[in-house]
Image (cartoon, rainbow, N blue to C red; front, side, top):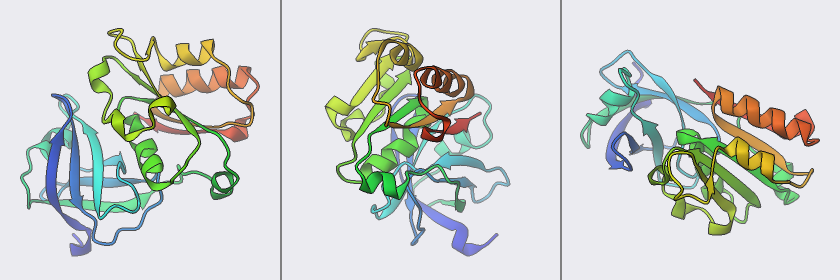
Length: 218
C-alpha cells in the first residue's frame, strides 16, 4: 500500500437514509471534472469506482455514495469516523467536457439517474457560466441531492414515485416529450438501460453519435 494513496476522512454528510457524501483530504490530487477514482477503506482489499463530486478548485475531495445492499465498500465506508483513512487510486477515465466546446459556449445536456449526477455536479462547480440543462431521474423528490447547487432554471428533477419533482416520469419520458437544439452536446451517467434508451431517443431526434457521451454505472 502506497502511503501517498492514503487520505484522511474529513467528514460524512448524510443526504438520505442510504445516500451520503464522503469528504476526504485532497493531498494535491489533480483531476478533470467527470473523472472517477478507485476507493476503499485503508484496511480493506475491496475498492469501488466513484465519480468525483467536488469541483476541481475545492480544497478537498467529495464522493457521492449510495449504500448498496450487501455492498462490500459502500456500507463499510459509511462506518468510518473522522480521521480514519481511505485508499484512493486515480484519477481515472475520460468522461469530461471538451475544452473547445466549453470555450465556444456550446450547449450541454446532462442526463443522470440517481448518484450518476456526481460528475455533472463536479462539472458545474468547476466551470463558471456553463450553458447546461441537467435532467436528474430519481424515484422520489427527496433524492434530489443538493439541487440548490444548480441554477434553478437549468435543473429538471424527474420523479417516478411521487409528483413532487419538476416532471413526473423518467428522464427518457422527458426526452420523448421535448425538443433540444441539434448542436447540443449530450452526456449521460447512470444505469445502463437508462443510458441506452436515452441515447436511442436522441439519435432518433437527429443527434449524431459524436455528440453523445456516456459513463455507465453497473
